[in-house]
Image (cartoon, rainbow, N blue to C red):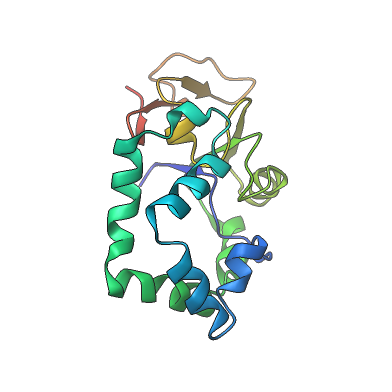
Length: 177
């Protein structure tokens, strides 16, 4: 792998939001996940992540909600959160040799934007791009935006090895060409 994009990523050994932290508590975690799987709850969660609430369409809700209708997915959500240990990941960030674009929404309510700066400090070859007017999940809130970042002293033509363009299109960040 020669390039990597982190979009509002986890991977730091820091506490999550109260919602994610509550999943770690037996019984409370199970109840919290089960209560958050209804379509109206999913709409509320999605709208809470978006700066532009009009991006929360029925199609988007169907795509996000459908996996949460499966018992194994519900169970995996709280079990995964309960067993996560990001310390080894955070310690390994400084040894990453891959060019990394750290892309974050300035108005992220799930992973505070300060964490983007922390990632950029820990990764040896990181480019930090903060998107204003964007919440969590930039691939939803910043669709059709294009961002390009490169070393400040380097030319920015597309063939330069330190040029990392990303186009946010559809539901995923796509490497630029």
